[in-house]
Image (cartoon, rainbow, N blue to C red; front, side, top):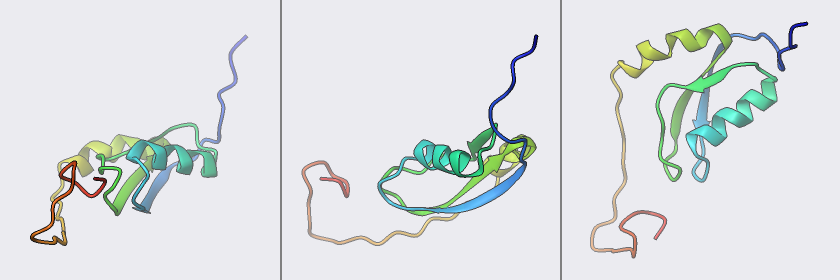
Length: 92
């Protein structure tokens, strides 16, 4: 007797604009739950306080994640000079 796998057999890539306050893993688990997908993963972590586009691969599309990890990325930042925090980041 075989075990029945949970979730739908769905494949594709969701391009999520990750909000601040969520870890990349929390974002993946939320998308996986919303789509009821069996398999989901991201193509590289963003810090919890960072916002930005996070590709989430579902099902068979997870096989392409390695190609996206090797792709060029760009970052944009806004800084305030002359201000210090206790932890040295936005959370302090």
